Length: 108
Image (cartoon, rainbow, N blue to C red):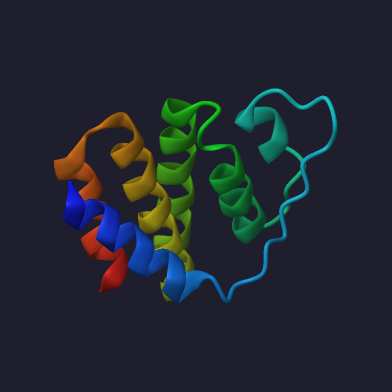
């Protein structure tokens, strides 16, 4: 558990230099509703990160979709951020093995 928290902290620090592009309109209740406002993968990922505590299972599903898309275009920054998001989500659920797997991928 401590390794997972350490990995999340380390990766968050590394990626903290990236700007936040997500805009969450008033009245939006779900992650899926908010995603419809985004026109880029970065925006979608930032939105998922902002709302991960609201609906973590939906956030994981959407983060996996983003991960699949960024792997196709081979964007190493977004691949790392997607893996970090998935690691945070699984950590929130208490699935430490899955969290550590995704967090390790985020570091490579």
